Length: 153
Image 1 (cartoon, one colour):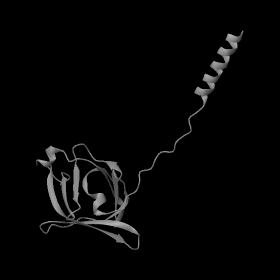
Image 2 (cartoon, one colour):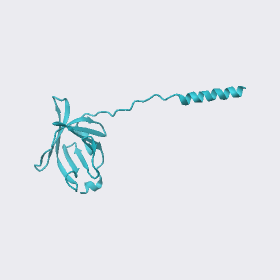
Image 3 (tube, one colour):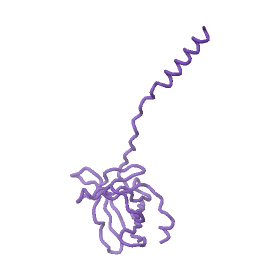
Image 4 (tube, one colour):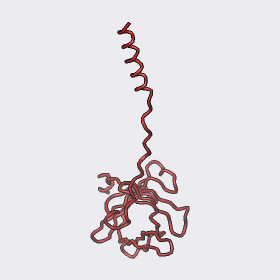
């Protein structure tokens, strides 16, 4: 009889142990970074354009260099082949919005970027930009190495 009671107690304890739910942990939100040349420095790939994934075969990469505030962009949005565009970028705080704005100017007199971009979010792995003059123009970049076949073009 004692063995049966022991087995029932052990079984009940195991049942209670398995039945107890683990406390739910809230998903960790990535830490927001200050928008500085140091924090945006490096290579990024355009993941979403206006909240939609890019069509197959369409690529946009940008590499920001903090030391001299230059960028190199690799893109094939307007050509079958990847084009390399270079220039300078600047970050400033829009006092009215209270947010950092990223703007760029292409080398060789090619002009400015189409928009100045409000940096809506910046984490170690993702950067969300919104055109200052067109809130429907949204770009989501993720940290990514630039593939060698793109660097070779």
